[in-house]
Length: 137
Image (cartoon, rainbow, N blue to C red; front, side, top):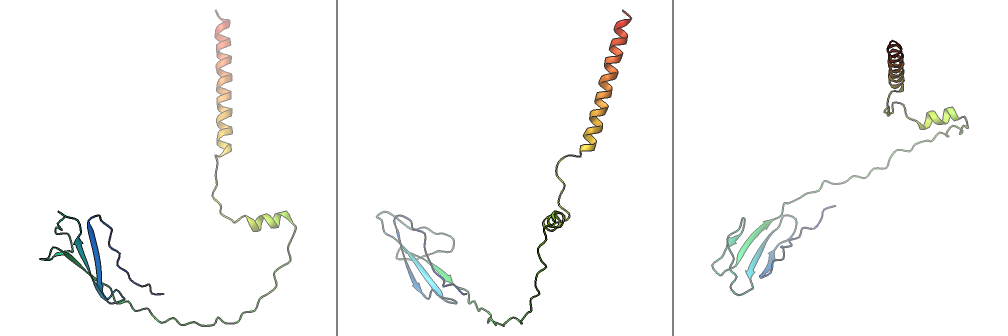
């Protein structure tokens, strides 16, 4: 759906705006800014043209947009096959709910089990060696 173009100048204290022209698809509009406050003078800005009467104008050109025609087609008729009866087997239910290939989270417990056994063994050797050395004194 094609939207309707619009021109909405930013409100600035001391300025008034007037929009004239064709604000439509493919149209051109001219925005005229006028200083409404005493001692306010417009200065050059990007895209704005200063006029001798103290106003400034900005020209807005709207692109001509052509929307392609929409062709509505009726989808082909389909036949439905009845669903398989529900099962109460937990293994089947879990397999259906849990997709294959989920990311593995957490740590590898085998590594930490081996590390704990190693540290426990080293602690035992340290105690045995300390007791043996203490007996010689």
